[in-house]
Length: 377
Image (cartoon, rainbow, N blue to C red):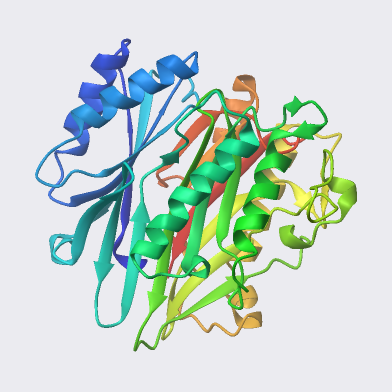
């Protein structure tokens, strides 16, 4: 069960990329826990530099347990590099199998109760290709891994989608919409009876398209995997055409929706682990406009807090003993100048929470902040 994952955030103090990388790797290796996935955040200035830095990261992260590596081209403000570490205990680590297919590394955990799969960030072979082509290529690599492990596409419970210049237009198509259309074709291969994954679709400075997933298939287990909706917001996969941008897909004859749930819970008895999708200041399907970063941050947090409340869980057939507690946040901000105001509000509510703050494009031009996380009770 994915309940075994713990999180920590490390921030560099060194001014050079190589120095910052060495510093973060040394810090991350100092724990007794076993690394599962390391997600680095930096500011490469071109796809060429992104590729070079990604290779340097991979080269420096080998060890007894080599973690899955993702490198996200999002600027950790006032830092050269930042790192989110996902770790597991040594008992759970004994169940892990480290594998590779088509140049993509992934980890499988197989037990009597479930089979879990975790990938590193899957990137396209050619970052110069169009966003649509990169999206198709990356999802094909993902599909090959799932087929290799005999896990269906709808076993994906959490998906991270990183899209270069996410709101930019290429001709009459928007990058995010190009990705959504490719994802819709990929997802159309199965029925998703248990709801779509929790997901984040977020911009990057460079790096093309990168996708990373957690997947799980339950066996003989009292656990259940439940999609969690938020009555304060329209489900993203039910958005109207009016909030989508770009030309319609040639096959679907319309712009396809972002196919994800507001959250996905893995619940067992009276406990649950909750993957919180990227969440912003949206009520219904409309963005909150005409207000500043403070109000957008508060509304975003209120959306998350209601989403993972015991009351909302009960509405989805999940009874939990305690209110779910947030374990980690990723905070995406459109403007560097909004960082301190957003951080102050978040830290007042969650003073001891591990959180990473980065500057990047959010999926709508009018949105100033997006927050994702993991909660557990």
